[in-house]
Length: 183
Length: 145
Figure (cartoon, chains in turn purple, green):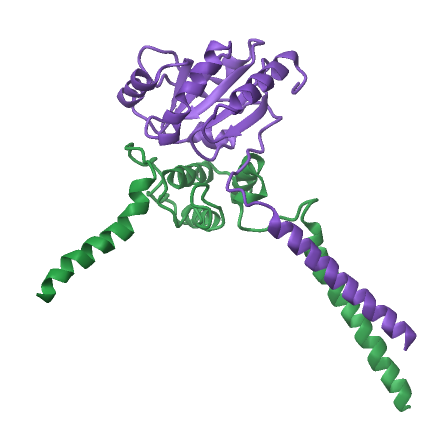
């Protein structure tokens, strides 16, 4: 009888532990963001044609020159991409080199977008079937990756860049530049 | 005067159906070649279909890419069909996506270092239950005998 009671208490304790686990997991805020599993890995090989006539396209080999960069995944039809344009410009003025991939876009639409919201980019590749987006593990627009000078992805920012994200991205760029985050 | 209500009902129906489409910005490019086109080989198409039904759409997260009309789902279908047409194994395509998006992208549970307890615990519980039953029933037999 005494042994039975001991095992009953064990069951109660187990059940309580299970409910505690449920409570902890349920009280965590839900995140709809799908993190890329490519952070910490080398960029997938790609070679995209220019998204606008006046500027060069983008290939994964463009990243191997020792300089860390921001890789912005955007589209002219994407509303939050307009909202992050001033922050990208701010990043550019603070010395960030920014290249971009335009998702499912037309040259004239990209040109009009740059005309309206500014052009902080040095290169823009056109990804008409989201192939590079999928290869990057990116799940929407806009997203911004930090890529070190060897072409390794060191950080991913999901969603539009807000004011408070600017120092974070600059810091990640600096870390990618010193080789502290990657290689 | 009842017929006046019909256009209003129609309008509200259209609004209800149309709003989610209108709110989410969409591109104007035509879908990727294999987004809505089946592979010519029915065997390969069946493989692709089976895989697409177990891959999660990234922007409409409780649908499979086979069910979704989102542009990115179309682009994912294109990737799946193209890779399978090129001779890749469906599980290799799934693995390619898992390497990019994590286990989350797959509706078909994978046995990995992190998920093995999910498969092991039920087996363990059944074993424990069987053990308890045997001891109880065995004990009763001894009581009876």
